Image (cartoon, rainbow, N blue to C red):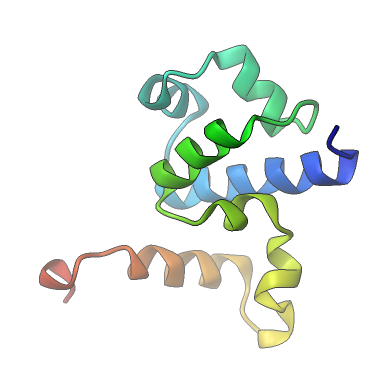
Length: 102
């Protein structure tokens, strides 16, 4: 059983990657064939998905499973002086294929 803290971290990370990708809850659910009510439980920190669902989410967002389940603030070492918005832009820029980059 996952702790409340694990659920909260996962929820925050899913919302973070949704914001970066610019997708809605419904779009994620439709793309990954996840029941909407189940997904809402995950992003509210009330439930924790099985590892297979975490893997589907990671593939969808273009990140590692660890990026979803680990505390991003500790992992990123927030003492780098960047805001969450700046980090999000950097992450988004890293996903642009080289042939499309300016």
